[in-house]
Image 1 (tube, rainbow, N blue to C red):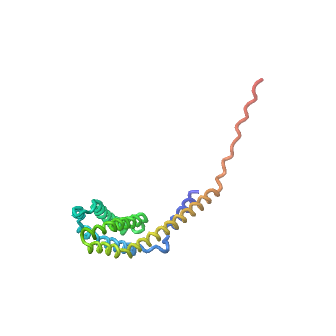
Image 2: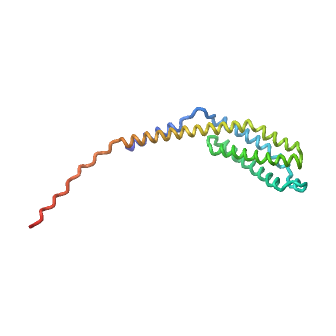
Image 3: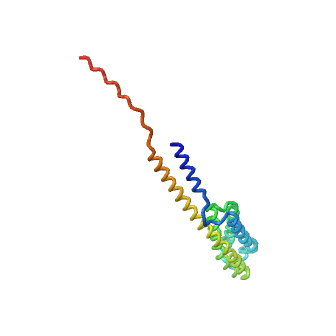
Length: 193
């Protein structure tokens, strides 16, 4: 019985660890993520030159200051998340974190760009939009990698589930050892009359 369970477990591991077609090799994904991170890093010096505190003195709402701080913080998160993904490109959670953080940063910057154009310099606003756009191909490759990883994880789960069901069926069909014959309890002695 133990041997059977061991064989089922080994079979399960071998199928789950088999390379899955359709997912880009780790080194290719690492290169894409590195390019994505480098391109995102180009936003840092631009954000550093923004002066939303001065915009407020020109009549801009205070929310621009909060958006600017949020964008700087989100850019740091994107960079950190991308570095983690670059080191471990097969982790779906890291890929999703990087992608969603980038989406959040792009959203924050879209709102901030209006303030940049109106209160600081329209060309700087255009530069932010341009740098965001230049990273779109890397973002699309990251999105594709996420889809491929998710499909791979679904396949692995299906294999694991199928193997577990097969092993469970094999274990339940294996006949149990015959029980030792039970000896009948001694008959009680007849009661004296």
